[in-house]
Image 1 (cartoon, rainbow over the protein chains, first blue to last red):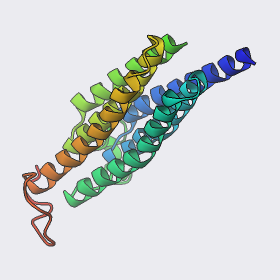
Image 2: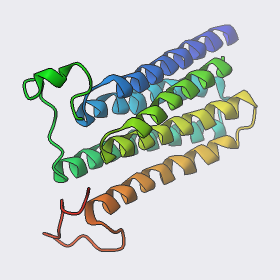
Image 3: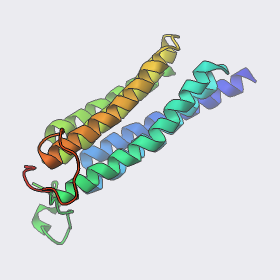
Image 4: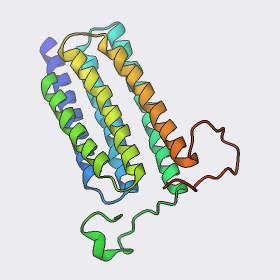
Length: 113
Length: 98
């Protein structure tokens, strides 16, 4: 039983880490601010959720598990809110979303020079 | 296993910091710093388990809270030019943000 729990938590940890690296790479690769919101949200929810779940399996029941759940719930509420607030502030500041047809010539490298 | 996860988070932190430095607009930087903050929360939690010290999780909780407050404060500063004012309707939202 112990081994099953360990292997399961290792799988969760590794997949969470993979999501985080993919999210960070997405934030580097995507052309525009509004498209980068997606991988940032991806890392906050999926990556964090899997890693915290993996840690939860390793933690013996008690205060440690409760704190992990607190962190998970906290991230669940704060990261979408901050992503939304950033997007609204960007829109209010007049940052126009990048459209491919706008600058076909700049479609190769990042759109918003 | 924790070490591999911690290393992966460090790599992701590096990439997010690179986006923070390179980000053309200020909102890219805010987004990257917010993402760095969340990754640091996870790094603290994983390191807490790596070194067998469960009290790291308290630090992670506080860090997650402060990260959120910091992002909202920076956004308010960028939008209104200063943080101290209250948000009356129709205030000069949008100007003076570059």
